Image 1 (tube, rainbow, N blue to C red):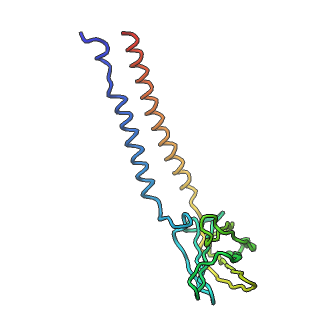
Image 2: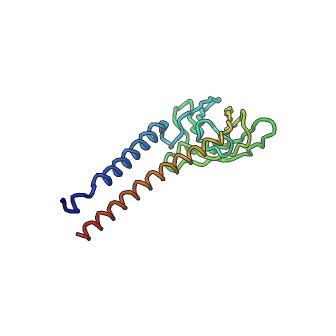
Image 3: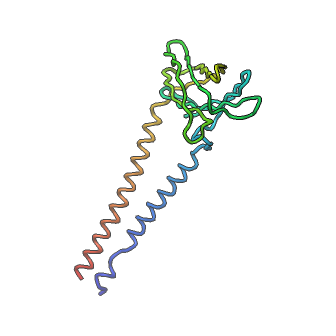
Length: 195
């Protein structure tokens, strides 16, 4: 008859660790593959450009397809004559949406602390449909405006619920795997103590 120590199955903790590692790797691969390109100011990936008399104004939003609620807007302004980006202007934004929506009053955007050629701010849109965003550049008692059209979409409520269920499911798998490892370690300690 074999001693008790040789009858303990040591492959169970290894299998749990292996399954947990594989699950984490698959989750990270899915997460990495779903990321968009990243540009200088952070996460704006789609820029719209409009030229006025003296400036080329670029506007980007986070998320790329604006949704009802708070929308982050980044703006860059380039002088057409010099080709240089402006960092010392006052940039204001006014937004008007479809019928029945509230308008966004004049909001002044601040320079981004990392790259001062970006002007960032938040606006709140409350209805889906086309919104006209008027960007006004005020520089040395001179001002110009550029108009952008954004299409605000309604989010599907199921998206958040599916994400929540996926995260909870992932945490449950990790929890059961960790529990299995601790139970097996406890059993092996008891077996060693009883010998």
